[in-house]
Amino acid sequence: MAVSDHVDLPTFMEGVKKRNPYQPEFVQAVQEVAEDIFEFMQDKEEYHSQQILRRIAEPDRVVSFRVCWEDDNGNIRVQRGWRVQNNNAIGPYKGGIRFHPSVTESVLKFLAFEQTFKNALTGLPMGGGKGGSNFNPKGKSVREIMRFCQSFMTELYRHIGADIDVPAGDIGVGGREIGFMFGQYKRITNNFTGVLTGKGLEWGGSLIRTEATGYGAVYFLANMLATKSEDLTGKTAVISGSGNVATHAAEKIVQLGGKVLTLSDSGGYIHDPDGIDQEKIDWVKTHKTHRRGRIEEYVTAFPKATFVAGKTPWGVPCDVALPCATQNELLGDDARMLIANGCKAVAEGANMPTDLDGVHVFKAAKILYAPGKASNAGGVAVSGLEMSQNSERRSWKEEELQQMLKDIMSGIHKSCLAYGDQGGGYIDYVKGANIAGFKKVADAMLAFGVV
Image 1 (cartoon, rainbow, N blue to C red):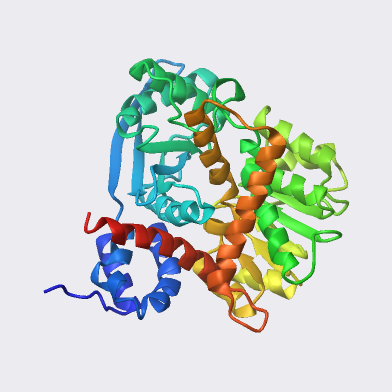
Image 2 (image 1 turned 180 degrees about the horizontal axis):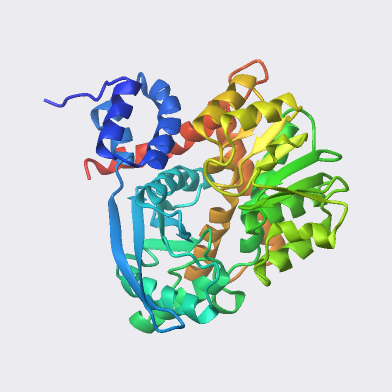
């Protein structure tokens, strides 16, 4: 006789913590989803009896491996690499590779778990995965990065494939690193296939992939504002980060008539009261990408700006905020400060940048708040389109891809409305995104039986 999994939320989360000790990021991600899913599952016996949520919160597999490489001085260095394949109920595993000293199994499990729902929301057939290493590319020569990427792929290649698992880039992994990894994959397998996304345009990449996450977050923000009959014209925006997502979010806000006040990195943030226009955004892109510089040097080029060391930008008054740096960068007190200063809307460009306290603060205040699994899905959406282009041996024009990205973000917004409308003009986008993503994955899992 089948035993139903009718436990309450605290009991369920106690089990998650017990099975995943010393993995706070993963437990946090599961908690944030479970808070909404438990209410939705109340009268759905099949989800309980088949233990669907517990199965989604247990990755299909976690691959851990050693990465040995040689630095320019001839020293042998040893890093650890991972690939977390969380769930492939609706398509091949899909998710980025991150190279950063903060990478742990817990961080990658949380990212793969989130990716499962994010990918489901896009409407494209992609499962959830994530990978990376505690390798730090900062300060490394190009040849050192090449040797590391080749060594990393020498192990990873046996776990991925165009219909198995299709990695992309993430923090510390851009077009250069994707190129090195793809070259090694091709060298080992003698196979030219769409096994990685974020590739160069010359060898199977997609137009607007670089811009997609930042642009998509702003398109989602615009969709939220439209529910209040507002747009971005004349609105001030505070953005964290100064990498790919942040600079392209800033670019799109400027294009839509908004004024960007801040950007940041791990050293602190810059505040430019005159606004960070396209010329300044282009300067930041060049400075961060080609010179590998720090954001504090912005004030040398643009003296009217100020640099605040060791702080995040959430104390700067604004109309809208976009956390685009990393996980848990916006805490409960930051959320309270944003609301006190009149912030009307928050759209996450990074993965889980708001901690649980902050999420609860935004939801209690009933402001427009989009979780990353909804608002930053633009990047993986265009990655999915790149997979389609690779399979068909074709490419789409930029204007076609821009329209597809807009349509996908609009579709995600509609999915959130379907399950997040609380009445009285309030949309709980966290609840809407969690339920819409969960339902698609859960129903596919039910169809497959116990596997």
